[in-house]
Length: 333
Image (cartoon, rainbow, N blue to C red; front, side):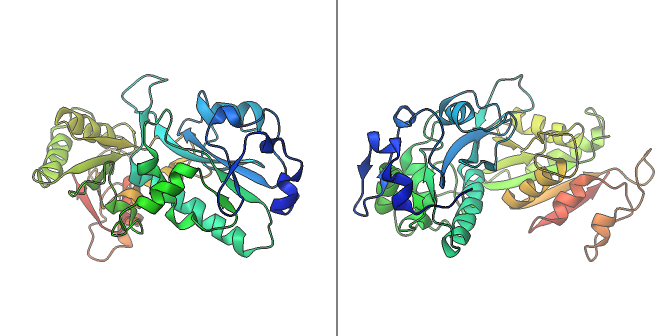
């Protein structure tokens, strides 16, 4: 990507056709209809809202697919020379495509934090381009600028990040007592009672009608009967599906992270999915089969790394997720 100065980026740009400016004479366009068709000037990267399937069927994501070279099934981070994706919706495993639900604000905030870290790195470098933040989350995902805007508070004043005007206004009007440094303390409505994100994951070999597994999941959930929680899981067979079904039957909101490719490593794989769950959760419970069960490794090396944790059970990727969460527990059936 050729790096131009901001001035030269915009000097002959068709983006000047519909501009309005802030006090720094930086250009903003809030509506996808204002963006010109065709390629963007070199050095301009637009942030667009996506979904975790990378379908790009509506809004800015569709426009980016048609004009700026992003591919189907790519949805997070750098998607092309001109596009950075922030997933704002996900596909629940209990529904048929193309059903999508909005992600929680705290999950979106984690991806925004990753972007802000990258933008700060680029600001310290010799790169002279800019990131253009569209009104992500404020279209199909159903959020308001007052909810999404403050998540970009750190970008206000950054010379290489251009924010929509209503995001800037939301940052200025936001309660200074709001602390976005810990995304787990931010829920969908910024209410006083903050929900805990409780992950329940584990063996995919467990039968959906296993009394031991159903009882183990119910016991975990019962610990939070007097608290507001969101059940987080990975959408796999076995424990993940039992946990999601239990939460839905009790009216507990769920947040399901589904891998986009069936591979351990790489973008959209199982490892990335498991680390995402570990990152957003306040606590992760991994439910594993005991050593007498059929198949699997009898000694879990994930749990062996944790002092005083039982590791004589069949290894599961759920234990890898638990190991990477700040608080975790392993339950052996």
